[in-house]
Length: 286
Image (cartoon, rainbow, N blue to C red):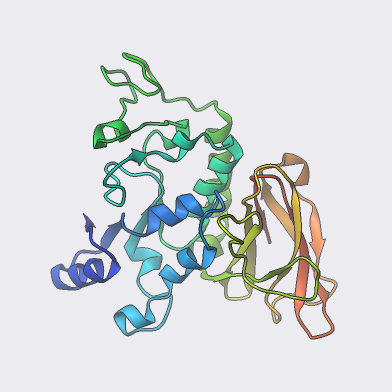
């Protein structure tokens, strides 16, 4: 049984415990951060920390979000935006950045959900919920300021690439069941830290790992819509020995698919890889 419980994670958890419902739809703090991280307007730790619930519920981390909260980027009423409501595509981001946003949702903890029309780049925006509820298959209030039009297309780039991402997710158990870690990065190969905003923006690679048993999958988005970026990323010390490699399972740049990156060891013992991500892009390595 799924319930939409507005009002924050603490209320959602209390309601689940009280009613016996299995799953809640996360529409409070999750969607905003899923939108803002790929756009470089939110510190990634603000999103990844949502999945560490020990303080909130008095239990260990990685407890109930993995399979008890449905995570979604766009949604039908955006209670978080009482004034102006807008889908992700309403701000006109590059199409590849939309892919990065939905891939972030698909490959992090929680039960990923795509709000209808987002995979078709619907760009509704306005001061009412109705602007988020365009007709998909014809009607008086269609997408893109139209009427009586059909908008479900499976041949678009975004639809096709999302299908590839979800195929990898189905094939890799760690992407569905693994623990999750935001990874530290370095531009100079010496000083490492979590990616974060500088001033009011963040143009950076944001990498994270999903780990299950002896398998680590490294994923990343690039919040820079203009430039390919390369950074040094820390990987699990025990799972990757110097000289081993990670192979690209997916990249928004198809030329990178199948390529490998080597694990090296820093003088202080860190095990790292040099990770390159296309502009506004997304990659998966194992």
